[in-house]
Image (cartoon, rainbow, N blue to C red; front, side, top):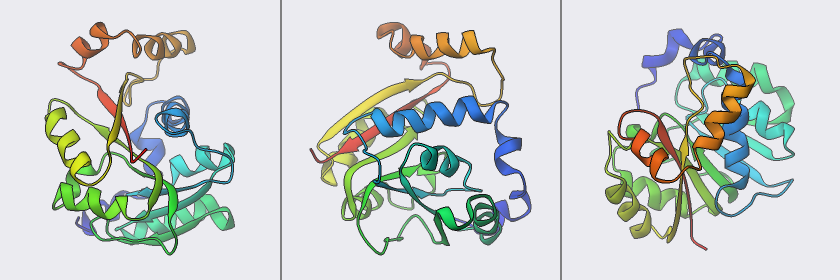
Length: 207
């Protein structure tokens, strides 16, 4: 993953990337907690490709410990400014980063495609993740069956997929946000929508 690609974009990254950052990241944080094995207060979440740490604020608010890692020094600096002493943030590459101690959950969002070898990346993460790996997956970019096979080869035998319909670039009124979340659980209708847009949130565990 290139350090320079995001060097000039770190300032207010979260504010510029999301039309309604709070709604989007709150929903992401809730699913990190609840999808697959449930996280408990005090569990540590390792956020690979953490950007400016916007997600970290929501995870800390839920009682989790947070460790952010990003390859871009400017992103690391912005995340440290945002989170201060509440969290550990360091520079590292998602391909080979290993935390000082095992973590309960590892997350990687909008960055899984940066892994130079996806199966090797999953295997590395499995070595230090106790409960689950959580990431987003565009089913129009990658075959779900191929990614699931790579996860199982790395030891993640339980894989849960949840459609994620809260939009990134459009700010919806609260009632429409609630409707989007409801439609995520609509089964065949949700899967049909994923043929055209939106993503899955994937929780993979060894349980």
